[in-house]
Length: 171
Ligand SMILES: O=P(O)(O)OC[C@H]1O[C@H](OP(=O)(O)OP(=O)(O)O)[C@H](O)[C@@H]1O
Ligand SMILES: Nc1ncnc2[nH]cnc12
Image (tube, rainbow, N blue to C red):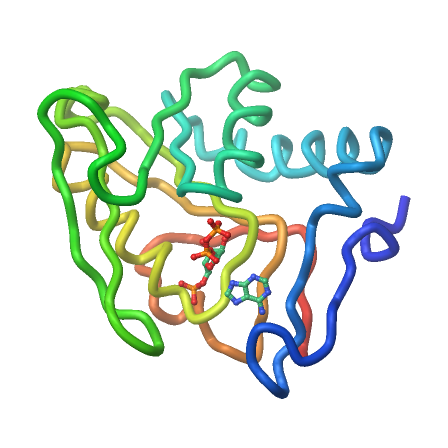
């Protein structure tokens, strides 16, 4: 199945010159969504994860079903002040401005292998921050993955772990 047919590139949104890649159309199509999750599961299984982590919000849509598919637990990396209990957090730079992600301090046991997932890798800033935060919590991060990679933004060059994606777009 060609999954590209099920991802919509919307012109000039949110920034002129860069397509906005929308996974709503993929989510809506049961067989395509199932195929995408099965292919991504096959890509990350060789890294032998103990847990999967996902970045709020679209990353949850990828990490949670993959965790079910692989029979693993799932950890949420969330926007600030959303998680109860003791949290760890990290501020990071975006193209314009800054953002922050947080996770529960006891979410990971020291040395657990945690793969970080998101729907899309653009500049890589969000993924790099997520990896740093997981390490702060004691995790080993053997790899990161996303459904979509915008190769022309060079995001994977900002990551110091292997990165897997299902669909790469050149523009
Ligand atoms: O590689 P980067 O340049 O950091 O961009 C990628 C991030 O941007 C989007 O999230 P967004 O902040 O739009 O939040 P959302 O998932 O809640 O839509 C996307 O889901 C990634 O998390
Ligand atoms: N071009 C893009 N399409 C969809 N989500 C994004 N997040 C950051 N850049 C994006």
